[in-house]
Image (cartoon, rainbow, N blue to C red; front, side, top):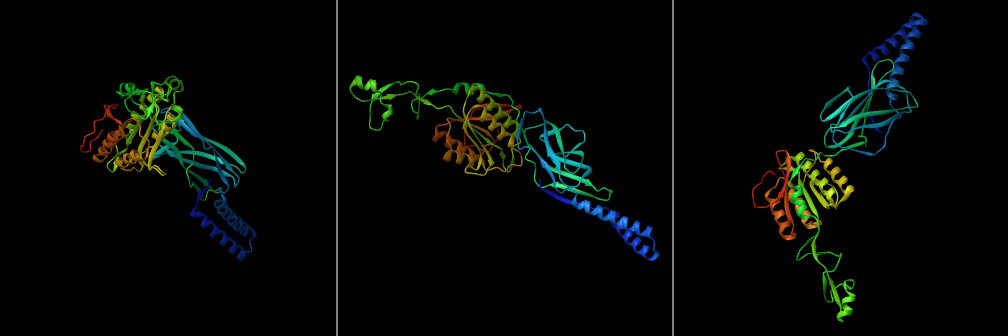
Amino acid sequence: MIWNKYEVEDRKLQGISVLAIVMMLISLYMQSKLVLFLGVLFLALAVANQLYLKKAGERLYVDYSHDKARFFIDEKGKWSFIIRNDGYPILKAELRVFFDYFVAPESEDSSSSRGLHEISIPISIFTGQTKQISIPFTANTRGIAKIRRLEFQIPSFLGFGETALESKLPLTLQAIIYPQPIPVKGLAEQLSKLQGANIVPYSVYENRLGPLGTRDYVATDSFNAIHWKASARKQSLQTKQYEKISETGWTVALNISDGHSINGNLEGLISSITEFAYYAFHKQLSYAMCINVRSAGNTPFLYLPKGDGGEHLQKVLETLASINRLNTSIPYHQMLSFYSRHLESQPFFIHAGIRTQEGNDQLLFIQSQKGVRLFELKLEEENGVLTKLEVQNESRKLL
């Protein structure tokens, strides 16, 4: 742990030092050993006090695991870390811990300001000693909570001043609080009609479970597609034919922006997408997710490729938990443009959030050029609603 260190001396200490020097000078004039002894004693105490303030907190370490803890709202948990002191003893110090408001402390000795909770813990730790610190909390709201700062206030032995230590970096302890799902009307109705393999006249996907029939072999056919029994029967090469099917797959796209600010319905939209994720998990549906939060890497926004199962659900919930109102977004239509040009398209596309005219143009392009069916996820009376999306060249509207 790297600390910023500050020393605060009591002004009385300077007066004591001056007094000690004066007493030493007077003792030389008076030839008094008692006055000289008192002067030397006071000066030694002042020097010892200054030395302690400079050395206190050196070789003070914080040890902790780097695991992520995951919680649902209202679940209880705790952060634990170990304080190790290999330097001067510390007595009657105060440890102050600052962490995100996504979790609520159970300690009564706590306060809140600027989006952070603060708790104070009295601590004394001698040289070579270790102490375990535990901070119980309750998951309060969706988000990723971290211990942002540790502060030590170490008083001097004589009470003249104190040394303050402040951690330079936040601890990597994390509490990930998953979003709370809300009911989504039309979710089961819309998805149940479309899940499974749908037979269509034209598709690049085929049902390989059994051939529908055969046809004459052409030079462009794969050698593995030859039906040898039918070829022997007809005395000419025959190619297997399969039913054309549409692949089941969804893309969920969330626009967190409302102009230059964050969508006021963001929490409701995230909760609705959470309900979709749970439904897809139980129905074993595969889906991808795009969110126009700026991200480093080859994809300039938050993107989860198509997947299913429990591991994919966990990634989705963690991604949704990471969104906050301090995120920097990219224009939604730019995200849709990148998606249509560079990422794998799915047969079904769910839009959530604000639509702009530029966004409508991109949705129309995805629908017409990619053959994708569009849906919209919106809020009505604190519940989500999933319906088919009829895109028109309309002005900006709130979904």
